[in-house]
Amino acid sequence: METLKKNYEFKNVLTKGKYFTGKQIEIYCYKNRKNSNFIGIAVQKKVAKAVMRNRIKRLIRENYRRLEKKIEKGYDIVIIWKKNVLPELATFEQIKEDMLTLFEKAKLI
Image (tube, rainbow, N blue to C red; front, side, top):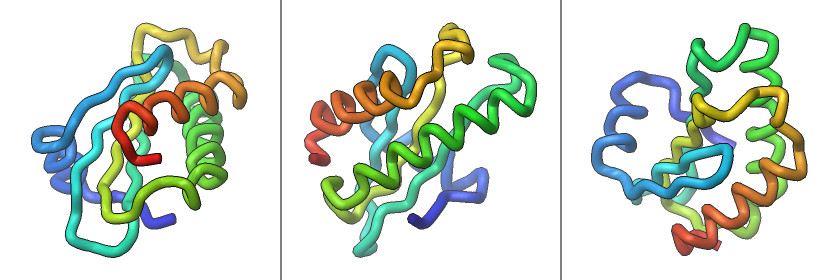
């Protein structure tokens, strides 16, 4: 799994990419000219303290890792945790359901 790290990489996907929203997360997808997917995960500081933000990121990353083989290659994907959703509600299963429905909406699976 390759990641988006630079601010301009995130901005590029957020401005030019297609937007899909679920119960807990939002996904932005933008076609890149590479043979692999690049993923970026963002959780705002307003959501929770660092420990909880990192837990949410780990759950999202692990769910993505398990879905990675099914997802079409050649996309930059930014996954954002919705700020109005309580971080205590972040369970592995709920994030998995949300990601599956969003990737199907985006026609990446």
